[in-house]
Length: 303
Image 1 (spheres, rainbow, N blue to C red):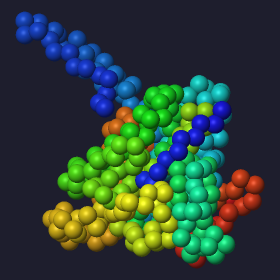
Image 2: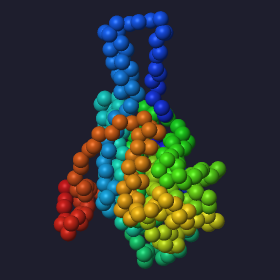
Image 3: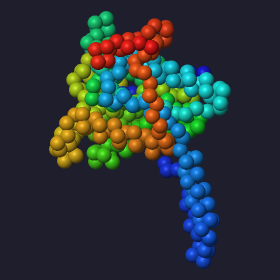
Image 4: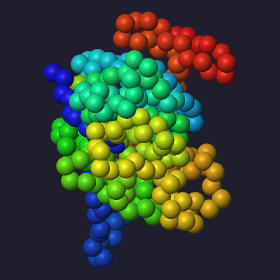
């Protein structure tokens, strides 16, 4: 059964430490065994997660979309055969594109749908219309919630927690949630949008964090259908605060620092241990089996 959650724009390990009484003097072998058991417990607390990292590239939306659906299909098959699967995290940027969720209305488009300023994709994720573009880091977690927590509200709050942690720990920006809305906010500005789909408790789609992106294309839409709030970016917030954190940082450096922090926070929040997965991008097929060609270094590559 498909579970869809509507969405608006966007732990510590269970291990514990045993302290020995002062009067107890174990031999070297017993000390070694205790440390070995502790290490084993910590390893068992961390789930494995494939990291597919294209954060320095612009991956067309339809390619990333097809990749997600392909991986979801893989995981469903693996769960059926083996009872579980590794989690996956995809990180990338998109060229300029508008995406509409299951709750989207054309009333929130400030352009003719037949003549859009950028490509438009209607997707199966929850939520309203949003914009993706260069300078925005997009994270697509494909994880088995049966092995985390089978609660979609919990999952959404955890995604928000990842972004809030990044902004606080890396940039000293105080971000928060807004009651009744999904995403991450700094004052009246939304800096991260979240929209998900869940299929048999396997998640896909995810979150988008505005880092250095040009925000002007948001004028073509009513982001997430919210008319009384603004959209912001890390770069803009740092500039407004004249923060020393931004001193000497160009856009590429700011994206790189944010990416590193996102990966670390996601690992901490969801208790994951990464291993890199190399895939051939963009050699994928769409839902109709038609090959998708993606121009990379002026060369067309196919699956």
